[in-house]
Image 1 (cartoon, helix red, strand yellow):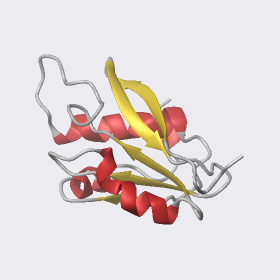
Image 2: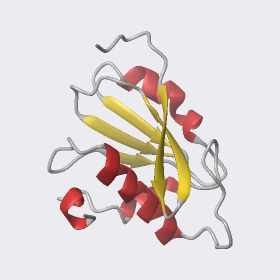
Image 3: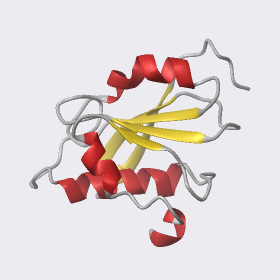
Length: 127
């Protein structure tokens, strides 16, 4: 059961053998909104926004690879397509109840990542 005063749950998923972190702000019965931080930021940049949205939405805020509580990339660069793939993996693996078109918002560099995330039929595209 969702409680408006509850803290977000720290969760883990894997992409390209990296252990990646995200915060799930609860309320899974509501529509999901995914908030992606910018470069040199972390998922807690969205805390104030998530606090406001969590009563009406299921808010998810990931840490990009090499940011916050996510693992650093081993032996490769941090490029846009890796970030895009990581977010697509999160959606595909964890957010299976997404509607046909779902809200996605990126701040700073996160907006560029969001532009490349397919928001239609994502689960079938990545499995």
